[in-house]
Length: 281
Image (tube, rainbow, N blue to C red; front, side, top):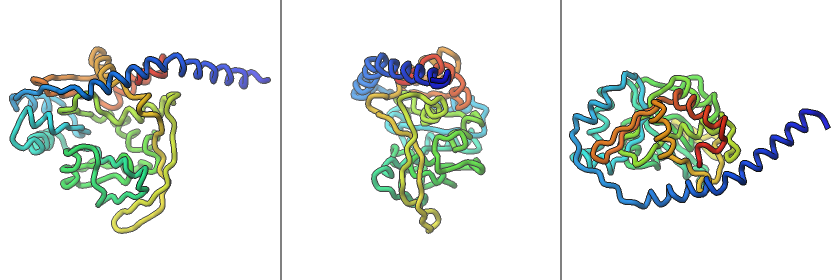
């Protein structure tokens, strides 16, 4: 037996042991998050100028936002969509929003112009106003403004050569407004580049329609047990806030969080190197 093969077997054995020893912790993390999701949240009326001050405090050209309209409505009233979009348009040259359509895993069909986003009311409304949508059938990105992904591959979602790799390289600002916990699809990208032991990459065959033309595609995307390996979103938030990587504001119950993709990658990659299950326990 060669030295390399012996080392490879020891490494495989260590990963198998880690998988077993971390199982109770990852299961507990997933269970507590599920219970937290069932709790009613209290969001009270908020002075609109406070949210405006936070948004305008970021000196960035591009922002990727996840918005919980229910909490924003409880905080601001009126038209919560316009209240957020107007402030984002004033503060940033380009606004990016998730246009995700997880149903592609079952339907195997995706039309860039016609398939509506499936992640919340905000994405659905923004879809009607976006200038551009990336042709990714699972994790498309809606863009209003000049920001684009000219050199990216769209057939391998979380590849370093894909859109989320570019967002990290550009250190794009992520904002969560009105979400109950940290929401960032960038975490899937970090799992991919850090080669975590509980996630892998799978190919999904289907049809992509762009500008009236249809083509057969093979889309590479993540594969993992989301029930057992659910991100410890509150723990990740608290660790990044403590390290000065993330900002977290609570405006009478309304959460506003800000973190830049490249800085988040650097921080989390260091933690994952020490503990491959860091994100999920």
